[in-house]
Length: 184
Image 1 (cartoon, rainbow, N blue to C red):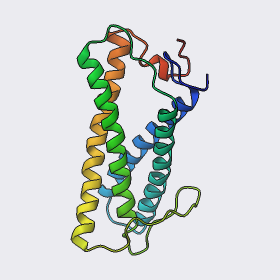
Image 2 (image 1 turned 180 degrees about the horizontal axis):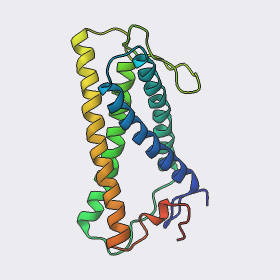
Image 3 (image 1 turned 90 degrees about the vertical axis):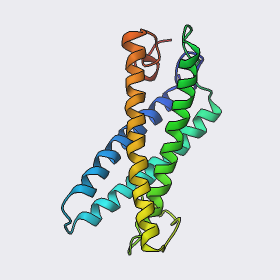
Image 4 (image 1 turned 90 degrees about the horizontal axis):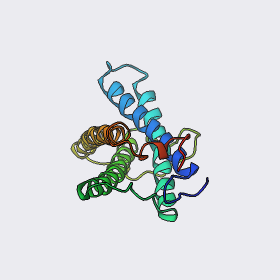
């Protein structure tokens, strides 16, 4: 099924979700690792690769939002309490907002290096959002990027726990409909 239905996500939504999830996991782990490793010559190569993957995640995010706008999400299962409906809407909105903020702050940081990092993974040029800023401003943007990335990681963890709760405790199809074997 290509398009989303009332009970299931279409395959484009599933691909965008899982590819984006993998990219976020890689970026969070790699970001932590590269900022905590001992400074060495290849450190800038790691920053450039991180920025390149981040640019591609931003494209995936835009595609996800377009797909979601053109293909409404499946309905939530019958029997959920009001707070669960509110939590689902707020957490998904929060995930999108956090992904945008992390992407934009990362983009700003990447373009303020002495040699701006402006290529994605396949070598496509990305225009800089900013070029030169005061050192303290750059440091504030970089710290904001890191803090919001950690907040995003926490919300992703809550998202995973909630999906598992629906699957194991509530025994509904919330998780199954995002998997390839999902049947409405």
